[in-house]
Length: 393
Image (cartoon, rainbow, N blue to C red; front, side, top):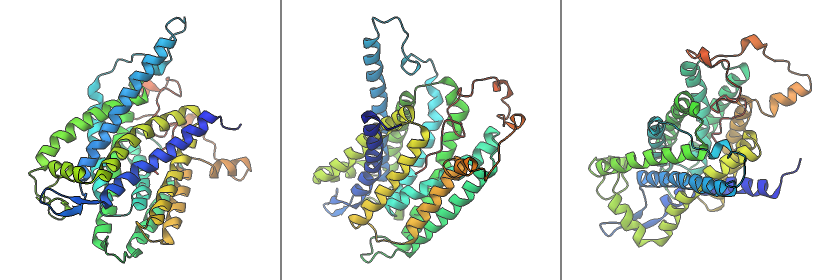
């Protein structure tokens, strides 16, 4: 069945805004502006940009309430009840505190790593989240990973190694990146995926049971994340950071210096606003694509986003071509398809090459949660759900 114009627009919106989100952040990192001591330096404020990302997530909550108001107004004279996603769902707001803290830590760490390495590597290395999500779901959710998921994890590890080696072999003639900086940046990004995987497991364990609409959930995590990180920025103003500092005072973050640099270079404002606005539209488009098409389609489009970021980085000269990087990306893609049981194994099954159906009595059950075995198959929309995929790219 062919896609409608609406579905095509949503798919394009997902790819474009997802690409802009990473590229605008990297663009800001590459720009120079006069700082608080009158020197022209690069805009190196990862925690400030991470705080801006949470502002974009808060916009999702505003979008949710606007969307709900419009639908309710249309249905005011109708007998039918509003859709589930637009009804008031009672839930304790505090359930988003732990996921928001994980999101804050992961995003800040990744943005710090992005200042030290390439934008394409930043995007590809986020594939490590599948490894940690799988392992943590086994340890804390009682999941049983099947053989193809373990194969997917092994393939992703191999892909990460190839991408990492390609970074080490990419020598920048202008000296913009150092080998130590690239190694540190890549390791920070991979380490952040442990926190991201923890966030996914926490959401699966404590949040999904409340059936909170996705846009509303993103918005509340944005509120908690923005509040917590804004408070921490005050402390960061006084904490020495050494080589990780990109401001004149050599502290973790200098917000006044960031605003001064923004005021002295209007293009920086465009880049920061691009990050804030794109994350809001990206979340909206991602949720809409999952509903209108499928989670599988969303994952494929997310992979296209990685390709767009890599090609754009090559086109504008942010990095040089290294033949190992597309190979690593291909291996990551294979691992992701294996883990999520997409394309490869379904094709093999359709040809009769693989017969790996599970008998009903081997269906895994959540550890310590056997009372939920009578729930409907769609009662949870978390990781390893039949209707969901892990989308790292």
